[in-house]
Length: 132
Image (cartoon, rainbow, N blue to C red; front, side):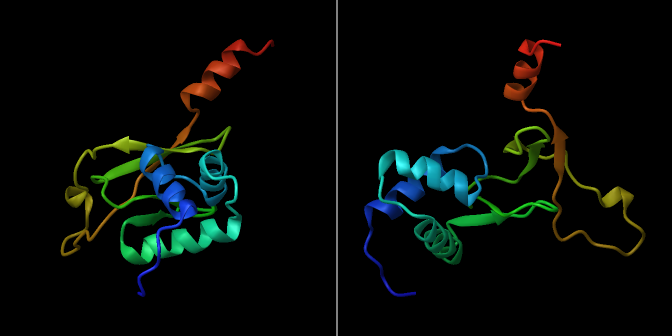
């Protein structure tokens, strides 16, 4: 890949992903990057996400039926939680281990993904405050 100059937009996008503490959709990246650099467009976000994935500094999180989300590749192995109300995705640190004991004889696990679904703390708090 050819060396590209570091633009304000690219720096803002990297900063957003590093500081997010959760996987972000391209639209979330755009909204946050625009807080630092107003002149960021969706095409710029997609172009930079593609570049960061190719570099290996960011990886794609695929959830069934959802658009891809992005997070830094430097994170330790973890799983995800998706809020069924606001659709945000959060990291669930760590892993309870292996599923090897549940495999049929002769099978080998190469990797696994676990996604939990429910309500995030913000949505639960909102529901408790809402009049019934």
